[in-house]
Image (tube, rainbow, N blue to C red; front, side):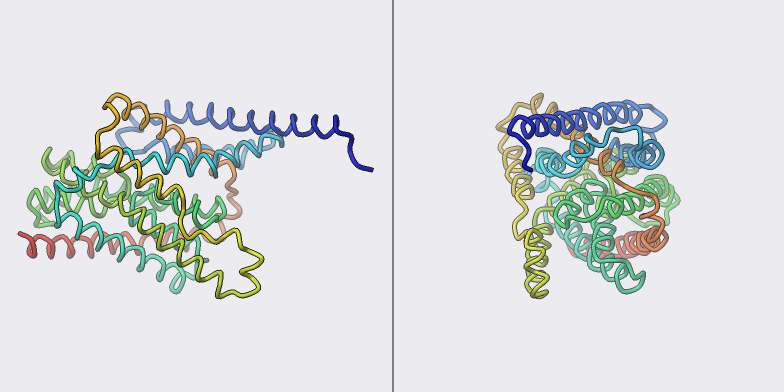
Length: 357
């Protein structure tokens, strides 16, 4: 017996209300996370709201999840998926072509070389050496190669991977990015890096995971080094678009090669992630100075909040039991990448300085 029209409407209304409540719950959770991240002790560690969000969300998801109505799960999923794509697109307002041009060819060469090499090494080491699944290996590599948690979010959306895999990748960003923020200035002032101001900016911006961590580390060197490091870091962020497009094409070809499996997973054919194109379009908008500075700042603040909501939602959907299985191997992959970023990144920086100096 089919449900009556009135019953169907009532069920749809209830589902919609539950979804809205779920989104509002995540928003309130993210607001609390934002206040916590603003505390001096937390901000001083370079811990962005995104990182605090996924950690707090995971604690709630594993310890208190039963207290959340089941109907709210759709809103949590919406925040972790669709809202995430919109927020990643608006991340483009933080980058301008003029800023990237300031560091010129040396900064671009540094960024491209480190991003490409780190992605290749991380994916290979994760899958072949540590025996991780493809998605976890790529997410871990992306977080180290491009822009930390934001890159993990963007890749998670394209790969359509499970939340716990993103959580493991973000864990690597937190650990090794925070270590860099404190270790790099010590190594620089001890004279062990053998870098001038330009070299320090290239090295810090080219190898540290999160934007906030780059600023925190370089500010202990000089304002000039901080300026260069920030621009180099944003150049790495800019590379998110071409890398996502290449990933989409690769996923397409891999799906075709799977024959029958391709038909079963047709939804995974993502040749051109729309949010990546949105990111690029907003980079152009920011470069043209179409929006007044106060408007851009307000949008960036809202975007950070939306990204925090997405990370919090991913945390809520994450289960410790899923992380436990691959956690040590994912962390070891992050360590391999960190050794590469420090040693290989320093070698690349020296080579770039010699080539363009």
